[in-house]
Amino acid sequence: MKIVNKSGYTLHGFIQGDEQELLAQHQPVTASVIIISVGQNTLFGFNQNREQWELPGGRIEANESPMECAHRELAEESSQELSKLAFAGLVHMQRPSGDFKYTALYCGQLDQLQDFNENEEWNQIKLREFNEDDGADLIHVEFVALLKE
Image (cartoon, rainbow, N blue to C red):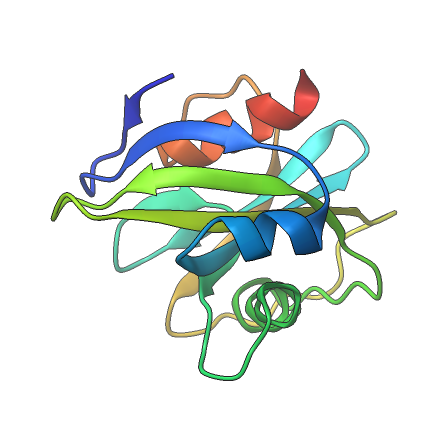
């Protein structure tokens, strides 16, 4: 599995298992990404800086766990709050610089979307079907595919 997005990041693999064991064994874990399902659809937001549809997520801040990052990024980018997120695994990525990193992948479900507040990163959200091709980050689309398998 080798997918490269337009920012130059390459997806190398997906590792499932116990969250604490994987986080201890695989470093650096630098970001968290969240897949939120509403029925059969997945929440994506339009990143106005990168001009593409993306899953909520971002860099882990100092003294923050990957789970805490996931909750913070979900609220900041999409205005969605969920009390329970499930760890899905670690995604092995290569940066454009050639360095390797891991991204923690979480998932959760909502019955319906909560009100969205536009922010400096995202200017809209939408529920999209898994197979839509409308300018979404290719790696994020693959994240969704990995969890549907």
